[in-house]
Image (cartoon, rainbow over all chains, first blue to last red; front, side, top):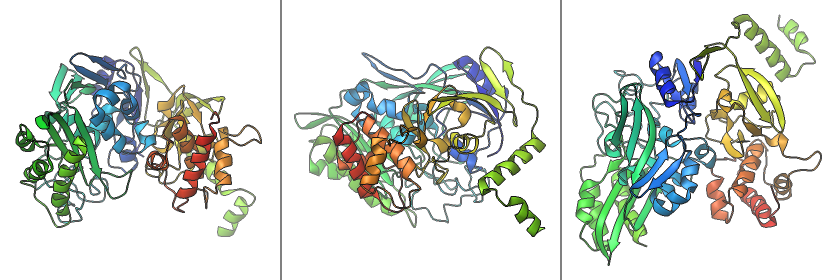
Length: 324
Length: 205
Protein backbone atom coordinates (compact mmCIF):
# COMPACT_ATOMS: atom_id res chain seq x y z
CA UNK A 1 0.00 0.00 0.00
CA UNK A 2 1.35 3.41 -0.97
CA UNK A 3 1.87 5.75 1.96
CA UNK A 4 -0.52 8.60 2.62
CA UNK A 5 -1.15 11.42 5.03
CA UNK A 6 -3.68 10.65 7.71
CA UNK A 7 -6.09 13.17 9.17
CA UNK A 8 -8.62 12.68 11.93
CA UNK A 9 -11.47 15.13 12.22
CA UNK A 10 -14.66 15.39 14.22
CA UNK A 11 -16.79 18.07 12.54
CA UNK A 12 -18.36 18.16 9.09
CA UNK A 13 -16.87 21.61 8.51
CA UNK A 14 -13.31 20.51 9.30
CA UNK A 15 -13.71 17.34 7.25
CA UNK A 16 -14.73 19.29 4.16
CA UNK A 17 -11.90 21.78 4.70
CA UNK A 18 -9.38 18.95 5.12
CA UNK A 19 -10.54 17.37 1.86
CA UNK A 20 -10.35 20.58 -0.12
CA UNK A 21 -6.82 21.31 1.13
CA UNK A 22 -5.06 18.49 -0.73
CA UNK A 23 -5.67 17.25 -4.27
CA UNK A 24 -5.99 13.48 -4.18
CA UNK A 25 -7.49 13.47 -0.69
CA UNK A 26 -10.29 11.07 0.17
CA UNK A 27 -12.62 10.50 3.10
CA UNK A 28 -12.46 7.14 4.82
CA UNK A 29 -15.29 5.69 6.91
CA UNK A 30 -15.62 1.88 7.06
CA UNK A 31 -12.79 1.41 4.60
CA UNK A 32 -14.04 -1.98 3.42
CA UNK A 33 -13.81 -0.96 -0.23
CA UNK A 34 -11.18 1.79 -0.12
CA UNK A 35 -8.54 -0.12 1.90
CA UNK A 36 -8.95 -3.07 -0.46
CA UNK A 37 -8.52 -0.81 -3.51
CA UNK A 38 -5.45 0.77 -1.93
CA UNK A 39 -3.90 -2.66 -1.36
CA UNK A 40 -4.50 -3.50 -5.02
CA UNK A 41 -3.01 -0.21 -6.20
CA UNK A 42 -6.33 0.77 -7.78
CA UNK A 43 -6.72 3.72 -5.40
CA UNK A 44 -3.79 5.74 -4.10
CA UNK A 45 -5.12 8.70 -2.10
CA UNK A 46 -2.46 11.19 -1.05
CA UNK A 47 -4.36 11.98 2.12
CA UNK A 48 -7.02 10.05 4.03
CA UNK A 49 -9.49 11.93 6.19
CA UNK A 50 -10.95 9.69 8.87
CA UNK A 51 -14.56 10.85 9.30
CA UNK A 52 -15.65 8.18 11.78
CA UNK A 53 -15.91 10.69 14.62
CA UNK A 54 -18.38 12.94 12.79
CA UNK A 55 -21.82 13.08 14.45
CA UNK A 56 -23.58 11.38 11.52
CA UNK A 57 -24.59 8.01 12.91
CA UNK A 58 -28.15 8.52 14.19
CA UNK A 59 -31.31 7.02 12.69
CA UNK A 60 -34.30 9.28 13.33
CA UNK A 61 -37.83 9.57 12.05
CA UNK A 62 -40.62 12.10 11.76
CA UNK A 63 -44.07 11.88 10.18
CA UNK A 64 -42.59 12.42 6.73
CA UNK A 65 -39.83 9.85 6.72
CA UNK A 66 -36.66 8.38 8.17
CA UNK A 67 -33.24 10.03 8.17
CA UNK A 68 -30.27 7.67 8.31
CA UNK A 69 -26.90 9.21 9.19
CA UNK A 70 -24.19 8.55 6.60
CA UNK A 71 -21.98 6.86 9.21
CA UNK A 72 -24.62 4.41 10.46
CA UNK A 73 -23.25 0.92 9.90
CA UNK A 74 -24.96 -1.38 7.41
CA UNK A 75 -25.63 -3.87 10.23
CA UNK A 76 -27.02 -1.17 12.55
CA UNK A 77 -29.44 0.00 9.90
CA UNK A 78 -30.57 -3.52 9.00
CA UNK A 79 -31.25 -4.33 12.68
CA UNK A 80 -32.86 -1.01 13.61
CA UNK A 81 -36.55 -1.37 14.63
CA UNK A 82 -37.58 1.64 12.50
CA UNK A 83 -36.01 0.11 9.41
CA UNK A 84 -37.24 -3.44 10.12
CA UNK A 85 -40.81 -2.24 10.69
CA UNK A 86 -41.18 0.48 8.09
CA UNK A 87 -38.54 -0.25 5.46
CA UNK A 88 -38.29 -4.03 5.38
CA UNK A 89 -37.14 -3.83 1.76
CA UNK A 90 -34.07 -1.86 2.85
CA UNK A 91 -33.34 -4.25 5.73
CA UNK A 92 -33.57 -7.25 3.38
CA UNK A 93 -31.31 -5.62 0.79
CA UNK A 94 -28.72 -4.78 3.46
CA UNK A 95 -28.73 -8.33 4.80
CA UNK A 96 -28.26 -9.63 1.25
CA UNK A 97 -25.01 -7.70 0.87
CA UNK A 98 -21.47 -8.72 1.87
CA UNK A 99 -20.88 -10.65 5.12
CA UNK A 100 -21.75 -10.01 8.77
CA UNK A 101 -18.20 -8.76 9.39
CA UNK A 102 -18.25 -6.33 6.47
CA UNK A 103 -21.72 -5.05 7.38
CA UNK A 104 -20.31 -4.25 10.84
CA UNK A 105 -17.70 -1.98 9.22
CA UNK A 106 -19.35 -0.57 6.11
CA UNK A 107 -21.32 2.66 6.45
CA UNK A 108 -24.39 3.83 4.56
CA UNK A 109 -22.49 6.67 2.88
CA UNK A 110 -19.64 4.37 1.90
CA UNK A 111 -22.01 1.76 0.53
CA UNK A 112 -23.40 4.36 -1.89
CA UNK A 113 -19.90 5.40 -2.99
CA UNK A 114 -18.39 1.92 -3.39
CA UNK A 115 -16.66 1.25 -6.69
CA UNK A 116 -17.57 -1.39 -9.23
CA UNK A 117 -16.32 -4.96 -8.77
CA UNK A 118 -15.55 -5.26 -12.49
CA UNK A 119 -12.44 -7.45 -12.50
CA UNK A 120 -10.74 -5.22 -15.09
CA UNK A 121 -11.25 -2.14 -12.90
CA UNK A 122 -9.87 -4.04 -9.91
CA UNK A 123 -6.73 -5.23 -11.71
CA UNK A 124 -4.27 -2.39 -12.23
CA UNK A 125 -2.48 -4.31 -15.00
CA UNK A 126 -5.62 -4.31 -17.19
CA UNK A 127 -7.00 -1.53 -19.37
CA UNK A 128 -9.98 0.24 -17.78
CA UNK A 129 -11.50 3.58 -18.71
CA UNK A 130 -12.96 3.97 -15.25
CA UNK A 131 -9.64 3.54 -13.46
CA UNK A 132 -7.47 5.11 -16.15
CA UNK A 133 -9.48 7.19 -18.63
CA UNK A 134 -8.46 6.53 -22.21
CA UNK A 135 -6.84 3.14 -21.53
CA UNK A 136 -9.76 1.23 -23.05
CA UNK A 137 -12.32 -1.22 -21.68
CA UNK A 138 -10.87 -4.64 -20.96
CA UNK A 139 -14.26 -6.14 -20.24
CA UNK A 140 -15.96 -5.32 -23.50
CA UNK A 141 -13.82 -7.71 -25.55
CA UNK A 142 -12.83 -9.76 -22.53
CA UNK A 143 -14.81 -11.82 -20.06
CA UNK A 144 -17.95 -9.94 -19.09
CA UNK A 145 -20.31 -12.38 -17.47
CA UNK A 146 -20.99 -10.01 -14.52
CA UNK A 147 -21.51 -6.90 -16.65
CA UNK A 148 -24.28 -4.51 -17.66
CA UNK A 149 -27.22 -5.19 -19.95
CA UNK A 150 -28.73 -1.71 -19.52
CA UNK A 151 -27.22 1.75 -20.05
CA UNK A 152 -23.68 0.62 -20.90
CA UNK A 153 -21.45 2.66 -23.20
CA UNK A 154 -18.55 1.94 -25.55
CA UNK A 155 -16.26 3.12 -22.79
CA UNK A 156 -17.59 1.06 -19.89
CA UNK A 157 -19.90 -1.89 -19.22
CA UNK A 158 -19.37 -2.13 -15.45
CA UNK A 159 -22.22 -2.52 -12.95
CA UNK A 160 -22.82 -0.89 -9.58
CA UNK A 161 -22.33 -3.59 -6.94
CA UNK A 162 -24.57 -2.40 -4.09
CA UNK A 163 -27.72 -4.17 -2.91
CA UNK A 164 -28.70 -1.40 -0.51
CA UNK A 165 -28.72 1.17 -3.32
CA UNK A 166 -31.18 -0.92 -5.34
CA UNK A 167 -33.63 -0.72 -2.45
CA UNK A 168 -33.00 3.00 -1.88
CA UNK A 169 -33.63 3.71 -5.56
CA UNK A 170 -37.00 1.97 -5.37
CA UNK A 171 -37.88 3.80 -2.15
CA UNK A 172 -37.25 7.25 -3.71
CA UNK A 173 -34.57 8.06 -1.14
CA UNK A 174 -32.81 11.42 -1.06
CA UNK A 175 -29.05 11.81 -0.59
CA UNK A 176 -28.10 14.67 1.76
CA UNK A 177 -24.70 16.21 1.10
CA UNK A 178 -22.55 19.00 2.52
CA UNK A 179 -19.70 20.70 0.71
CA UNK A 180 -17.69 23.89 0.31
CA UNK A 181 -20.71 25.50 -1.39
CA UNK A 182 -23.24 24.40 1.21
CA UNK A 183 -25.76 21.60 1.61
CA UNK A 184 -27.65 19.79 -1.15
CA UNK A 185 -30.38 17.19 -1.48
CA UNK A 186 -30.15 14.84 -4.45
CA UNK A 187 -32.82 12.35 -5.50
CA UNK A 188 -31.39 8.85 -5.32
CA UNK A 189 -32.27 8.10 -8.94
CA UNK A 190 -30.20 11.15 -9.98
CA UNK A 191 -27.24 10.43 -7.73
CA UNK A 192 -25.36 7.78 -9.71
CA UNK A 193 -24.36 8.27 -13.35
CA UNK A 194 -24.42 6.10 -16.43
CA UNK A 195 -20.90 5.63 -17.82
CA UNK A 196 -21.26 7.51 -21.12
CA UNK A 197 -17.95 9.06 -22.15
CA UNK A 198 -16.80 9.60 -18.56
CA UNK A 199 -16.95 6.27 -16.76
CA UNK A 200 -14.37 7.56 -14.25
CA UNK A 201 -17.27 9.44 -12.66
CA UNK A 202 -19.57 7.10 -10.72
CA UNK A 203 -21.96 9.75 -9.42
CA UNK A 204 -22.88 13.42 -9.26
CA UNK A 205 -21.18 14.28 -5.98
CA UNK A 206 -19.32 17.58 -6.47
CA UNK A 207 -15.65 18.03 -5.55
CA UNK A 208 -15.27 18.45 -1.79
CA UNK A 209 -18.73 17.14 -0.98
CA UNK A 210 -19.52 14.68 1.79
CA UNK A 211 -22.64 12.52 2.09
CA UNK A 212 -24.17 13.37 5.46
CA UNK A 213 -27.27 11.17 5.36
CA UNK A 214 -30.01 9.38 3.47
CA UNK A 215 -33.62 10.41 3.78
CA UNK A 216 -36.26 7.83 2.98
CA UNK A 217 -39.75 9.34 2.65
CA UNK A 218 -42.63 7.63 4.45
CA UNK A 219 -44.61 5.33 2.16
CA UNK A 220 -47.67 3.12 2.10
CA UNK A 221 -46.09 0.04 0.55
CA UNK A 222 -47.62 -3.03 2.17
CA UNK A 223 -45.76 -5.56 -0.01
CA UNK A 224 -41.99 -5.40 -0.19
CA UNK A 225 -39.34 -7.84 -1.29
CA UNK A 226 -35.69 -7.97 -2.27
CA UNK A 227 -34.63 -10.88 -4.45
CA UNK A 228 -30.96 -11.50 -5.14
CA UNK A 229 -29.60 -14.11 -7.52
CA UNK A 230 -25.91 -14.96 -7.24
CA UNK A 231 -23.38 -17.68 -7.93
CA UNK A 232 -23.49 -19.04 -4.40
CA UNK A 233 -26.12 -18.99 -1.66
CA UNK A 234 -24.56 -16.10 0.25
CA UNK A 235 -21.68 -13.62 0.24
CA UNK A 236 -21.42 -12.91 -3.48
CA UNK A 237 -22.30 -9.97 -5.68
CA UNK A 238 -25.58 -10.10 -7.55
CA UNK A 239 -25.87 -11.52 -11.03
CA UNK A 240 -29.30 -9.93 -10.96
CA UNK A 241 -31.30 -8.49 -8.09
CA UNK A 242 -34.77 -6.94 -7.86
CA UNK A 243 -36.27 -4.58 -5.29
CA UNK A 244 -40.07 -4.49 -5.20
CA UNK A 245 -42.29 -2.13 -3.22
CA UNK A 246 -46.03 -2.39 -3.86
CA UNK A 247 -49.16 -0.91 -2.39
CA UNK A 248 -51.89 -3.46 -2.98
CA UNK A 249 -55.51 -2.89 -1.94
CA UNK A 250 -58.20 -5.50 -2.56
CA UNK A 251 -55.91 -7.29 -4.98
CA UNK A 252 -55.31 -4.19 -7.08
CA UNK A 253 -51.88 -2.52 -7.36
CA UNK A 254 -52.27 1.12 -6.28
CA UNK A 255 -48.60 2.02 -6.35
CA UNK A 256 -45.47 0.23 -7.50
CA UNK A 257 -41.74 0.94 -7.30
CA UNK A 258 -39.17 -1.42 -8.76
CA UNK A 259 -35.46 -1.36 -9.38
CA UNK A 260 -32.78 -3.83 -10.40
CA UNK A 261 -29.20 -4.46 -9.38
CA UNK A 262 -26.38 -6.19 -11.25
CA UNK A 263 -27.64 -4.95 -14.62
CA UNK A 264 -26.36 -1.37 -14.98
CA UNK A 265 -23.79 1.22 -13.93
CA UNK A 266 -26.36 2.48 -11.42
CA UNK A 267 -29.38 1.03 -9.60
CA UNK A 268 -31.78 0.55 -12.51
CA UNK A 269 -35.25 1.93 -11.87
CA UNK A 270 -38.02 0.18 -13.83
CA UNK A 271 -40.25 3.18 -14.47
CA UNK A 272 -42.19 1.65 -17.41
CA UNK A 273 -42.82 -1.51 -15.41
CA UNK A 274 -44.14 0.55 -12.50
CA UNK A 275 -46.52 2.39 -14.83
CA UNK A 276 -47.61 -0.91 -16.35
CA UNK A 277 -48.40 -2.41 -12.93
CA UNK A 278 -50.45 0.41 -11.42
CA UNK A 279 -54.20 -0.24 -11.63
CA UNK A 280 -53.79 -3.91 -12.53
CA UNK A 281 -54.59 -7.01 -10.49
CA UNK A 282 -51.70 -8.37 -8.44
CA UNK A 283 -51.68 -11.68 -10.28
CA UNK A 284 -49.24 -14.12 -11.85
CA UNK A 285 -50.40 -13.04 -15.31
CA UNK A 286 -49.81 -9.35 -14.61
CA UNK A 287 -46.38 -10.09 -13.18
CA UNK A 288 -45.36 -12.22 -16.16
CA UNK A 289 -46.24 -9.36 -18.52
CA UNK A 290 -44.55 -6.83 -16.24
CA UNK A 291 -41.34 -8.88 -16.30
CA UNK A 292 -41.26 -8.68 -20.10
CA UNK A 293 -41.71 -4.91 -19.91
CA UNK A 294 -38.88 -4.72 -17.36
CA UNK A 295 -36.30 -6.32 -19.64
CA UNK A 296 -37.33 -4.48 -22.81
CA UNK A 297 -34.29 -2.76 -24.28
CA UNK A 298 -31.74 -4.94 -22.50
CA UNK A 299 -28.63 -5.60 -24.58
CA UNK A 300 -26.57 -8.70 -23.88
CA UNK A 301 -22.99 -9.40 -24.84
CA UNK A 302 -21.36 -12.80 -25.39
CA UNK A 303 -21.09 -13.83 -21.75
CA UNK A 304 -23.83 -11.87 -19.97
CA UNK A 305 -26.73 -12.53 -22.35
CA UNK A 306 -28.16 -14.93 -19.76
CA UNK A 307 -28.96 -11.96 -17.56
CA UNK A 308 -31.85 -10.93 -19.82
CA UNK A 309 -33.68 -14.22 -19.33
CA UNK A 310 -32.63 -14.35 -15.69
CA UNK A 311 -33.76 -10.75 -15.14
CA UNK A 312 -37.19 -11.49 -16.55
CA UNK A 313 -37.61 -14.51 -14.29
CA UNK A 314 -36.26 -12.55 -11.31
CA UNK A 315 -38.68 -9.63 -11.72
CA UNK A 316 -41.64 -12.02 -11.92
CA UNK A 317 -40.45 -14.03 -8.94
CA UNK A 318 -39.72 -10.93 -6.84
CA UNK A 319 -43.25 -9.62 -7.51
CA UNK A 320 -44.76 -12.99 -6.62
CA UNK A 321 -42.77 -13.24 -3.41
CA UNK A 322 -43.74 -9.68 -2.48
CA UNK A 323 -47.45 -10.51 -2.45
CA UNK A 324 -47.01 -13.96 -0.86
CA UNK B 1 27.68 -15.87 0.95
CA UNK B 2 24.80 -18.31 0.99
CA UNK B 3 26.56 -20.30 3.71
CA UNK B 4 27.21 -17.17 5.74
CA UNK B 5 23.53 -16.17 5.47
CA UNK B 6 22.44 -19.55 6.69
CA UNK B 7 24.81 -19.43 9.64
CA UNK B 8 23.64 -16.02 10.65
CA UNK B 9 20.07 -17.17 10.58
CA UNK B 10 20.71 -20.36 12.55
CA UNK B 11 18.71 -20.52 15.73
CA UNK B 12 16.36 -17.81 14.61
CA UNK B 13 12.81 -18.45 13.54
CA UNK B 14 11.80 -17.06 10.16
CA UNK B 15 9.51 -14.65 11.96
CA UNK B 16 12.32 -13.30 14.19
CA UNK B 17 14.57 -12.89 11.20
CA UNK B 18 11.92 -11.04 9.22
CA UNK B 19 11.24 -8.78 12.17
CA UNK B 20 14.89 -7.84 12.57
CA UNK B 21 15.43 -7.16 8.91
CA UNK B 22 12.23 -5.10 8.76
CA UNK B 23 13.33 -3.09 11.78
CA UNK B 24 16.67 -2.35 10.11
CA UNK B 25 14.94 -1.24 6.94
CA UNK B 26 12.66 0.98 8.98
CA UNK B 27 15.63 2.61 10.69
CA UNK B 28 17.16 3.42 7.36
CA UNK B 29 14.09 5.15 5.97
CA UNK B 30 12.34 6.60 9.02
CA UNK B 31 11.81 10.32 9.32
CA UNK B 32 11.36 11.88 12.75
CA UNK B 33 8.03 11.17 14.36
CA UNK B 34 6.05 14.35 14.26
CA UNK B 35 2.44 15.09 14.94
CA UNK B 36 1.06 18.34 13.76
CA UNK B 37 -2.11 19.78 15.22
CA UNK B 38 -3.91 21.96 12.71
CA UNK B 39 -7.19 23.50 13.71
CA UNK B 40 -9.27 22.26 16.60
CA UNK B 41 -9.36 18.52 16.16
CA UNK B 42 -7.45 17.79 13.02
CA UNK B 43 -4.47 15.55 13.55
CA UNK B 44 -2.13 14.81 10.72
CA UNK B 45 0.44 12.14 10.26
CA UNK B 46 2.65 12.60 7.21
CA UNK B 47 3.66 9.90 4.75
CA UNK B 48 6.19 7.99 6.83
CA UNK B 49 5.29 9.42 10.18
CA UNK B 50 4.04 7.22 12.92
CA UNK B 51 0.99 8.18 14.87
CA UNK B 52 0.38 7.32 18.53
CA UNK B 53 -2.38 4.78 19.04
CA UNK B 54 -3.97 3.54 22.22
CA UNK B 55 -5.67 0.19 21.94
CA UNK B 56 -7.02 -2.27 24.47
CA UNK B 57 -6.35 -5.80 23.28
CA UNK B 58 -7.65 -8.78 25.24
CA UNK B 59 -7.99 -6.63 28.35
CA UNK B 60 -4.55 -5.06 28.17
CA UNK B 61 -4.01 -1.41 27.21
CA UNK B 62 -1.25 -0.85 24.66
CA UNK B 63 0.29 2.52 23.81
CA UNK B 64 1.59 2.04 20.31
CA UNK B 65 3.05 3.96 17.44
CA UNK B 66 2.01 3.01 13.90
CA UNK B 67 2.20 4.19 10.33
CA UNK B 68 -1.23 5.10 8.95
CA UNK B 69 -1.07 2.33 6.35
CA UNK B 70 -0.75 -0.50 8.87
CA UNK B 71 -3.87 -2.62 9.11
CA UNK B 72 -5.25 -3.80 12.43
CA UNK B 73 -4.41 -7.35 11.34
CA UNK B 74 -0.75 -6.53 10.72
CA UNK B 75 -0.54 -4.59 13.97
CA UNK B 76 -1.88 -7.55 15.95
CA UNK B 77 0.40 -10.05 14.26
CA UNK B 78 3.58 -8.07 13.73
CA UNK B 79 3.71 -5.67 16.68
CA UNK B 80 1.74 -7.46 19.38
CA UNK B 81 2.79 -10.99 18.38
CA UNK B 82 -0.83 -12.12 18.45
CA UNK B 83 -0.45 -14.49 15.52
CA UNK B 84 -3.61 -16.44 16.33
CA UNK B 85 -5.49 -14.05 14.05
CA UNK B 86 -4.72 -15.28 10.55
CA UNK B 87 -4.04 -13.53 7.28
CA UNK B 88 -5.92 -15.47 4.62
CA UNK B 89 -6.82 -13.42 1.59
CA UNK B 90 -6.00 -9.97 3.07
CA UNK B 91 -8.92 -8.56 1.03
CA UNK B 92 -11.96 -9.13 3.25
CA UNK B 93 -13.11 -12.19 1.36
CA UNK B 94 -12.23 -15.12 3.64
CA UNK B 95 -12.85 -14.10 7.27
CA UNK B 96 -9.63 -15.68 8.66
CA UNK B 97 -8.73 -12.30 10.19
CA UNK B 98 -12.02 -11.87 12.10
CA UNK B 99 -11.66 -10.16 15.50
CA UNK B 100 -14.09 -8.30 17.74
CA UNK B 101 -13.79 -4.51 18.00
CA UNK B 102 -15.96 -3.01 20.72
CA UNK B 103 -17.92 -6.28 20.66
CA UNK B 104 -18.53 -6.34 16.91
CA UNK B 105 -16.94 -8.87 14.58
CA UNK B 106 -14.96 -7.27 11.77
CA UNK B 107 -12.34 -8.16 9.15
CA UNK B 108 -9.14 -6.82 10.69
CA UNK B 109 -7.40 -6.89 7.30
CA UNK B 110 -9.60 -4.07 5.97
CA UNK B 111 -9.37 -1.85 9.05
CA UNK B 112 -6.51 0.61 9.32
CA UNK B 113 -5.09 0.32 12.84
CA UNK B 114 -5.17 4.11 13.31
CA UNK B 115 -8.93 4.08 12.80
CA UNK B 116 -9.32 2.05 16.00
CA UNK B 117 -8.01 4.65 18.48
CA UNK B 118 -9.29 3.95 21.99
CA UNK B 119 -11.14 0.82 20.96
CA UNK B 120 -11.35 -2.54 22.63
CA UNK B 121 -10.15 -5.51 20.57
CA UNK B 122 -10.66 -9.18 21.34
CA UNK B 123 -8.70 -11.81 19.44
CA UNK B 124 -8.71 -15.61 19.64
CA UNK B 125 -5.98 -15.35 22.31
CA UNK B 126 -8.38 -13.43 24.55
CA UNK B 127 -11.07 -16.10 24.76
CA UNK B 128 -9.73 -18.73 27.13
CA UNK B 129 -9.68 -18.14 30.87
CA UNK B 130 -6.25 -19.52 31.72
CA UNK B 131 -6.38 -23.21 30.87
CA UNK B 132 -10.16 -23.16 30.58
CA UNK B 133 -11.27 -22.83 26.98
CA UNK B 134 -14.17 -20.67 25.84
CA UNK B 135 -17.38 -22.72 25.32
CA UNK B 136 -17.16 -22.09 21.55
CA UNK B 137 -13.58 -23.40 21.48
CA UNK B 138 -14.70 -26.49 23.43
CA UNK B 139 -17.57 -27.02 21.03
CA UNK B 140 -15.38 -26.73 17.92
CA UNK B 141 -13.12 -29.42 19.38
CA UNK B 142 -16.02 -31.65 20.38
CA UNK B 143 -17.65 -31.42 16.94
CA UNK B 144 -14.40 -31.54 14.98
CA UNK B 145 -15.21 -28.15 13.44
CA UNK B 146 -11.95 -27.90 11.51
CA UNK B 147 -9.40 -29.83 9.53
CA UNK B 148 -6.26 -27.82 8.75
CA UNK B 149 -7.23 -25.19 11.33
CA UNK B 150 -6.12 -22.08 9.46
CA UNK B 151 -9.59 -20.52 9.27
CA UNK B 152 -10.52 -21.70 12.77
CA UNK B 153 -9.62 -18.60 14.82
CA UNK B 154 -11.72 -16.50 12.46
CA UNK B 155 -14.52 -19.07 12.47
CA UNK B 156 -14.61 -19.12 16.28
CA UNK B 157 -14.56 -15.32 16.63
CA UNK B 158 -17.31 -15.07 14.04
CA UNK B 159 -19.30 -17.90 15.64
CA UNK B 160 -19.32 -16.23 19.06
CA UNK B 161 -20.58 -13.00 17.49
CA UNK B 162 -23.16 -14.93 15.46
CA UNK B 163 -24.68 -16.35 18.65
CA UNK B 164 -24.47 -13.03 20.54
CA UNK B 165 -26.14 -11.17 17.67
CA UNK B 166 -29.05 -13.60 17.84
CA UNK B 167 -28.39 -15.04 14.39
CA UNK B 168 -27.91 -18.68 15.38
CA UNK B 169 -31.53 -19.81 15.58
CA UNK B 170 -31.44 -22.38 12.79
CA UNK B 171 -29.00 -24.17 10.53
CA UNK B 172 -29.99 -21.92 7.63
CA UNK B 173 -29.57 -18.75 9.66
CA UNK B 174 -26.14 -19.86 10.92
CA UNK B 175 -25.04 -20.70 7.38
CA UNK B 176 -26.17 -17.25 6.17
CA UNK B 177 -24.58 -15.30 9.03
CA UNK B 178 -21.35 -17.34 8.93
CA UNK B 179 -20.96 -16.91 5.17
CA UNK B 180 -18.13 -14.41 5.67
CA UNK B 181 -15.89 -17.20 6.93
CA UNK B 182 -14.61 -19.52 4.25
CA UNK B 183 -13.29 -23.01 5.12
CA UNK B 184 -11.48 -24.57 2.19
CA UNK B 185 -11.34 -27.92 3.99
CA UNK B 186 -15.13 -27.83 3.98
CA UNK B 187 -15.73 -28.36 7.70
CA UNK B 188 -18.99 -26.42 7.45
CA UNK B 189 -21.40 -29.11 8.72
CA UNK B 190 -19.34 -29.60 11.89
CA UNK B 191 -18.89 -25.85 12.37
CA UNK B 192 -22.67 -25.44 12.20
CA UNK B 193 -23.11 -28.28 14.72
CA UNK B 194 -20.61 -26.65 17.08
CA UNK B 195 -22.45 -23.34 16.93
CA UNK B 196 -25.87 -24.98 17.34
CA UNK B 197 -24.70 -26.73 20.49
CA UNK B 198 -23.38 -23.53 22.06
CA UNK B 199 -26.59 -21.73 21.14
CA UNK B 200 -28.73 -24.49 22.67
CA UNK B 201 -26.53 -24.65 25.76
CA UNK B 202 -27.46 -21.05 26.45
CA UNK B 203 -24.25 -20.34 28.34
CA UNK B 204 -23.27 -16.68 28.61
CA UNK B 205 -20.56 -16.01 26.02
